[in-house]
Length: 313
Image (cartoon, rainbow, N blue to C red):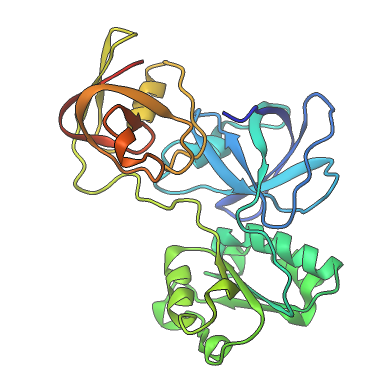
């Protein structure tokens, strides 16, 4: 597991009714790792859940890190605890920045954001503006009241910015066809709700694949509608826990006060790998090789197919 950095909450402000901005500074005063446009940090939220948040400001020598967190209505503990429990002066742990959504060299850039997806896109706009590189930014939200960083983006981007508000009406969604009708040399970067990204994917299907980039933190579905409760037996702890239909093994173990290791909590990093003693596992991760599945399980996302699971915990 990546060594975590102790941070202090230096500032909190409301961006919208649903989105809060958190400014985090180093608790030790030591220099922070650089963060390029599009980078994110993984935060250990007050609930214990690990969540990834894009960094708002790119910097080679950052004095602090700024993130924006939307309070999700179906929060599984992460965003809700950030909004409800975190206050200025609190300490919080993070993992160093990573970047799976980095800018490439291109003749031009089309940046597309929807809702909270503006966070990495705003960072990119700052970087491109500072480098005097041509770009357009299309930012789709429900209304001006739902538009985080709207004023700052207008000042930064000027005529390069298109703000579109659909008022929550499907008939009013932005029409991207004019941007994608003819393949161009620009690179497209998109982050936002799945509906927005699915639309961009469909419209850009005839473009060179290497020109289209998406930011997706949840590559797999964590909880499914047909999931059922099951029991896990922790062999070392001599405990039996029931995993509810709407919770993961990891969350259930954490709720019971048993220390666990995790990072992505979406089945993509491998940090929560746990030795499987016995049981019929529904493997949902994107990490384990077929030959590893007999004796291992990713407890952040996988479940039991039938019966109990016995874990070496």
